[in-house]
Length: 112
Length: 114
Image 1 (cartoon, rainbow over the protein chains, first blue to last red):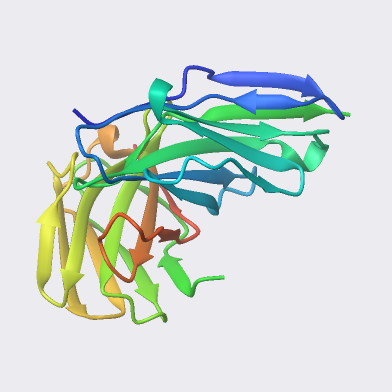
Image 2: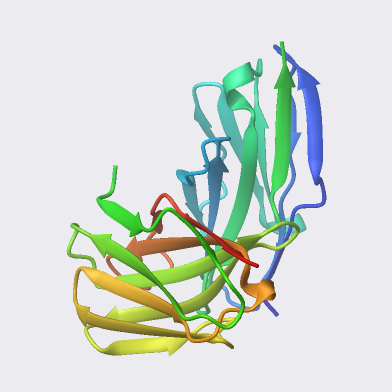
C-alpha cells in the first residue's frame, strides 16, 4: 500500500524557535522519491526538495534541513530559527511506481 | 517559475450545471495532472494525461472527465456539478511520470458548487 502520514495537523511556534514537521510513508517499492512542498497563505504550491530512496544523506538548505531515515520510513523537515514568513501548510509526498501520493499537510503558524 | 496558468481562478456555480476548468502550460511537458485539495486529505489525483488524447484515471475520478487536444492545454470537466465537488483544483505538469521528476503546480482554481 502507498501511504503518507503527516500526524501533526497544526503546529504553532514563536519566531526563532526550531520546528520539525514529521512525515512517515509506506511503500512496497524499493525505488521511490520523497518530496516536500510549501503552500503559503497565497495558495500556490512551491516545490522544496526531492530525495530518492537510495540517498539517506541529510540535506541542509539555509534554515531548512531534511532527515531521511529508511529504517523508520520517515522524511522529516526541520526549520531552524523559524520566521513569520515560514507560516504555511507543508505537504510531504511520495512517488513510487504509482501515482504521487500526498500527506494531509501540516499547518505551521509562526508568531512574532 | 514554471509556466502554468489556470482559468478561471474562482468560480461559483449551481448544482447540476456543467463546469470546465482549463490548465495551460508553456513548458512543453508531456505529463499534466489534475488534483483536488480538500482539508484533511491533502491533494488527490483526479486524472492525468501522458500526451495528446492520452489520459488516465486517478484516485478520485468519478464525476470528472478530461481532454487534451493540444500539448499545452488540459481541460477538466464536471458534467453535472455537485456540492461534494466544491474544492480547490490544481493542475500540475512534469516532463515524465517517472519517480525522479517533481511536479510543478499551477496557481489553483477555487470552485464553489451551491
